[in-house]
Image (cartoon, rainbow, N blue to C red; front, side, top):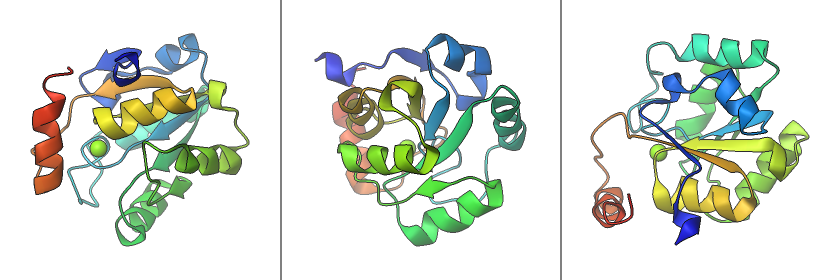
Amino acid sequence: MSLLKPHYRFNCILDISAEDIKKAGAKFVLLDTDNTLALHGSQEPIEGLYEWIAEMRKNGIEPIILSNNSRQRIEPFAKKLGMPYVYKSAKPLPKGFRLACKKLGAKPEETAVIGDQIFTDVLGGNIFGSKVFMTEPIGPETDPFIKFKRKIEKYFR
Ligand SMILES: [Mg+2]
């Protein structure tokens, strides 16, 4: 069951410091979006996210969005934040992680993934060889399929 366990747990992405990422041995952060950077489907980033991204970059850590959501949802959001992005990433499969690494010029072992879901972010990150930072979902889930997954996830948390 270790593939379902994160390396680190935080309440919110804003609680993760550049130092935490560096200590984990990572130089690149792959960011889930829904319920990690914004409410599900929302184009409004959580308060403090711009500052968080700037702080990462100041410390030589490059962020990229890695989301299973659609192009229509992710592209405008990523552009607003000035970040590269991968949409429909098919987490937990490695293909989206690989594409993100290609865009960044990163190796798997130099990456950290930050996200709120066990069966996409945590499992995918572990399979790929990223350091996995799991956060609590920032808002209530509206998608019925994800709601169902959350119920199952409770047994693994
Ligand atoms: Mg999420």
